[in-house]
Image 1: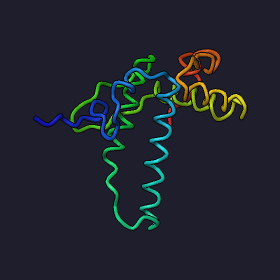
Image 2: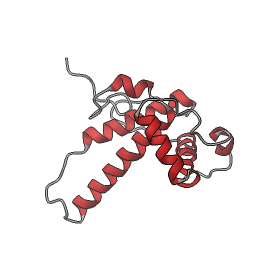
Image 3: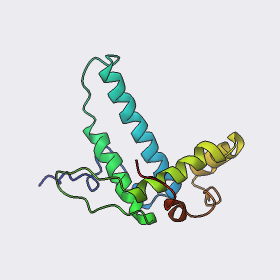
Length: 145
């Protein structure tokens, strides 16, 4: 019997589902950010004709929503996945994502980021690489878009 394809539950193009279910918060942020960038770029390039054929990105869409749903492990509040519905990114999700995004894009120096990547790639302890404070506290100041 074929697995039911529910956004947030079905992993789509992801190969190592157990890794995703157990990865660090930092890794999950990067997976979401990378998949989101890839999907956006592909849609953009198909829309303006740089890519002539229409590429099916459903595997990547399932994958990113699977990753987004995994953020619940870190306290993000997301409504339960439902058949035939995309995951609805909540205020809580965007607070979490922006907290990590701001940290990696604005707070780390190039040297610190290189050190983080080296440790992460070697599967060593990266726990010191996280924003100060708590995204849930900053959550109260963020306006949903």
